[in-house]
Amino acid sequence: MQLNTILLMAEWQVKGLQVFVALSLLIILHEFGHFFFAKLFKTRVEKFYLFFDFLFPFGNVLPFSLFKKTKGDTTYGIGWFPLGGYVKIAGMVDESMDKEQLALPPQPWEYRSKKPWQRLFIMLGGIIVNVLVAVLIYSSMFAYWGESYLPAQNVKLGISADSTAQMLGFKNGDLVKSVDGKTDLSLEEINQLILLDETKSVTVSRDGQDVVIPTGTIASGKMIQNKKPQILMAQYPFVILEVNPKSLADKMGLKSGDSIIAVNHVPAPYFSDFKMLLDNAKVGTPFQLTVIGKDHTLRELKSVIPSARKIGIGLKNAADYFETKKIKYGFFASIGRGVSYTGERFSLYVSNFKLLFTSKDVKLNENLGGIASFAKIFPGKFDWQGFWMLTAFISVILAFMNLLPIPGLDGGYVVFLLWEIITGRKVNDKVMEVATTIGLVLLLAFMLYANGLDVLRALK
Image (cartoon, rainbow, N blue to C red):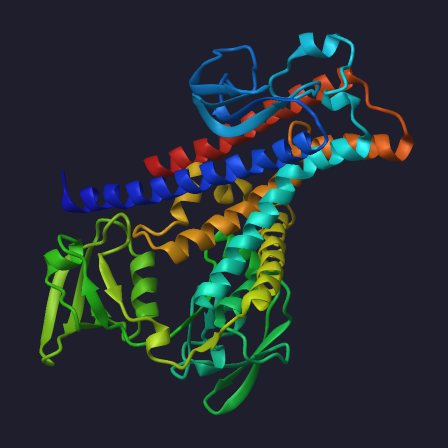
């Protein structure tokens, strides 16, 4: 087995473990939200499961638990079908489709016997907990690590503009001055504003002159279409900090302190240049690095473009070359920032989701993904800060997705409950059963489609 393949497998194992732990933790907490409010209103919870103990969404097909333990009225367990989780609340039309129970007269401890507003809180419980978990994680991170960012104005070597940015009018070396008159923004924030189509123009300094560059939906569409969260990156020298043992870089002979200045004889003095050339090159084709060592000697190193488009190096980043700003938060300030940051992440995801259906430049099948796509966003090398940051963001995603008004999801139940609260008329259980069945089947089809796209991409 080739070395690159072994390293890629190890990286995916780290990514896979992280996404498994993060999703399992968030699923349990989401279901606990339903459990908590059900118990608060004295409603019996018959099951509390991580994963499904049946072939979702068919409640009577292949019923099997990997583990289960009954305590009081509730059976806690782990199902064999690794897709989400659920709580079975007595007297409720849910994934289990327990029609025998629903055919009996309502009992005081059942969901259907509770007041509409109580049932509303039971259904919103998972979403509420997902939001609170995100706030708690972000607040804790801000309290412990603070918040560091690099103002775009401090990037003294200018920005590197990819093809989309160049199409808008940006050029390599531009010095960002303001965005719609706002200064002190980081490049990450500027890229997000462009992605979300929430900015009209960016003012840059070029050759001593101010240039106003208009932005718009064409940029946001291209960013999603090309799967690039950034079209503007900081330019900074490409100096290698460390070389991973047995990596492609190690095999090539790269060393700590080396500076890469060209790829295939194309000048690449900055890391952004190297990354752009590597991303645009065809996998398996030869590439040659021109390197200057710490002793100022010039070397030419050869290999082929790896499938992962990574060569196994750690390097200095922009913060090592330019002045960053760090904000320290006290206890209460960190909570406030946690709340506002959760709102920002929620808004970011909603805007991204909306663009999938509203932008003509974005193709759904090119941007939709399943578990493997989730795993890709985790780093191949574990670190606590990155793990918790991504776990909090996934919690925000789960809150939004469960809020969608689709039967079978929490949002679907909420729609029926709001109808009952507004009109005073309860939706017929038969209608609920049919709607929930259709919704669950559609959800299964959607998830199979999304994960199928991941498989097809991996086979290419």
